[in-house]
Image 1 (cartoon, rainbow, N blue to C red):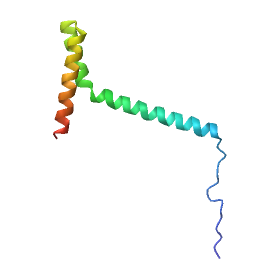
Image 2 (cartoon, one colour; image 1 turned 180 degrees about the horizontal axis):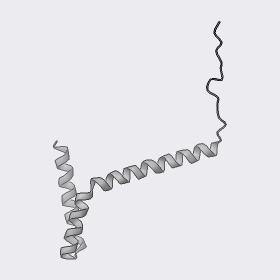
Image 3 (cartoon, rainbow, N blue to C red; image 1 turned 90 degrees about the vertical axis):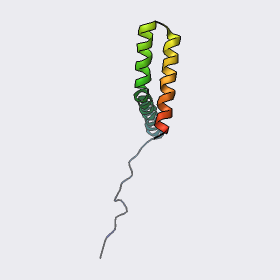
Image 4 (cartoon, rainbow, N blue to C red; image 1 turned 30 degrees about the horizontal axis):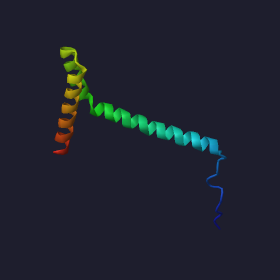
Amino acid sequence: MWVVSTMAFPILPIGYGEIIIFLVLLIIGVIVILLLKAVIHFILPIVAAVVVWYVTHSLIYAGIAFLVIAILQMLLRRGR
């Protein structure tokens, strides 16, 4: 005769505070991962903007270079 225990997986006492802290940390982790992904995605436009700023010392030209390279990069990735 088989004996089946209902306590195969005991329920740990977890309070609402711990659940809230877990959810907050989970949301912060997702935000950090998305920010890192965005930074990695925009490495080439950032480098182009820094080079343009170094050569011209103009933040406007650097911003234009960043936007142009970022838009071209997004358009070329969608074309694949």
